[in-house]
Image (tube, rainbow over all chains, first blue to last red):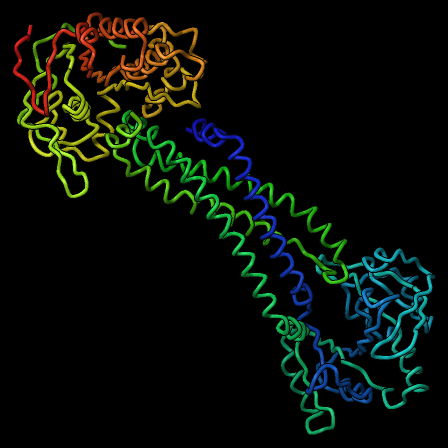
Length: 384
Length: 237
């Protein structure tokens, strides 16, 4: 039976090849689009349940006074507090953009982000140099930076040219860890602001709070926000995951559109494969009638058609998924500044294969139903 | 193939007052009307008649490929009209070998694989299947062509493969619809000689539908159908 399924599948090599190619392209597109969605959620996936983010209740673009640091540290349940500023800025020109943060590395900033791995000597060199900077491996590779290189960024939120010396290159502990960030000393930024724009000095974009256990998060968040209630800069404290989800929700419509397109692609290939199978089955109605004459029953014919459809779909699916690996690599290398993390997850690959097989199954339903119902005498009369 | 029993006078096929019609849109076209016919074990019957006379329909009914509207149809005492589709399929697998005018071999399978097809429905081992297939291919004189695909065989050879396929399960009945209709004179003669041999040496009950008087001449018995009615049996031997 399998021999007949296989021979039927390759009976029209050109048709089979084109169908497999179409299926492969569809599954490739599907997996790529799903990977793009996963890239959007990469920050969410990498969030720690023991980290909270405190920001200005009005909006993230409004800063918080540095003076809040001491009060937050005093809240029961808080294990450590670090802070940072969104620097913005571009490298060389407007298109060379990557996330730049000013942080205080002398505080245990990287201690509460254990997913950022940095050699001890480099970490020390970064800590000791006020103009020192740390870049992710992907970012350093993208621009060919080496330790000791001088890097000049043009500020947009903080105007002027900012010069840094690359002292450390960090790597990510997880596949979802962002290796495209650039960190420098908050003190460097703050001292410069004191000279050029004093009103903007001693402010941070957010505080990151480390709690000992995830279950402490709600009460610590409530306590922090209560501390600054009715102040000039009220706060919102939420888990790191909720904080990232807030960003993702701003682009929810785009994500929805990508997801819809990914399913539309699958819908199109379903129609193509269904048409191929319907055509093949129609051509072979006489053969199905002959098989019935010999005593083959409807389930046998269903297996024949379903098997052929599943073979085509599985072949296309596997080819498509195999192509996804180099495609994601190319995507990442070409669009790394937009998609710094492109996690081709096992879930995406499994979903791609399941979807391919489901397409194979659905495409075979109508032809199989038709073949199962074919009247021997009627079909033979058409053939004869 | 099993050793042939001595032909008996018992009727293998018993048909009484059989009717069959087809629907074409809102119209009902009567094809067979009040057919009564007995076919004896070991008989070689030729059904003749002009196109549209209903001979293929009658053959299909006897072979369990179609169902009558009304009447009695017993094959080896079994009432085919009472069987479900699945039961009828099992019955065909065990009791009927069908030979078509246009051979109807599966083009992607070799001669051997085509002949093996009906045996896939049995519990025979691969080895036993191979022995059966080789035996019938030898019988039809195509041992040396068993690994050829249908497109690599002549029409006569394809029809002999089709006969081997019909024979391989050792059925009671061989039904052949215009088995020589698509063959040249020489190939037709070889096929008819083969059918005659199956009838005479192995006492297979054979029913063929044919337009060709020369083909019918190989039969032991000829019945004619005109406009869905069977003419009187004047030549039973």
